[in-house]
Amino acid sequence: MRIGVLAVQGSFSLHARMLNAIGVKPVEVRRVSDLKDLDGIILPGGESTAFQIIMNTDDLGDQLHRKLQSGLPAWGTCAGAIILGHNKDGPLPGWSLVDIEVVRNGYGRQVDSFVAPLKVSGMAGDFQGVFIRAPVFLNPGQEVDVLAEFKDDPVMASQDNLLMTSFHPELTSDTRLHEYFVQHFCVRSDLGDKKSA
Image (cartoon, rainbow, N blue to C red):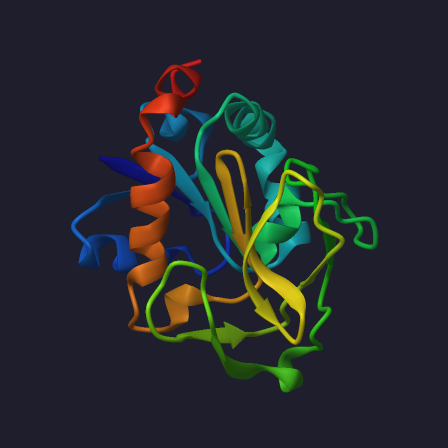
């Protein structure tokens, strides 16, 4: 299995470390050719504006967008989630692939960072959510599954082939969400034809 990690900016090396820890080969994605034969991709935390500027070189952003529309499983964390949802308040818009509104820095700036125990649907025990300049998710559409909440707002959600978290699982030693992404999204046989599209 080959899981890509968008490696143009942000915490991609930490996601790669987590994938290695669960026995999955990470592929650092920096150019269009790196998208070939992936079973899924992680869009890590970082600066969402920088992501989109960098991805618009070498056609990487357009090709990645098309892959996700065609069914390639993806997981966006923090800034990666901003790219997947409706982001109307930033310098560059989100791709609106998940029917959920995303407000940048909704939980505050760097000095407002915090850790909170989260109840994740289907997961035993709490998961420690690390929130750093985290976006707030609002108004999920009918097709969106809310998988975890903080103070009654979604912080983990999915729609079809896409998963998003407003927090940073890669900043913990807990690999359960990386396992969840691989097991529930990247090995789903019903996406097989779409991934090769």
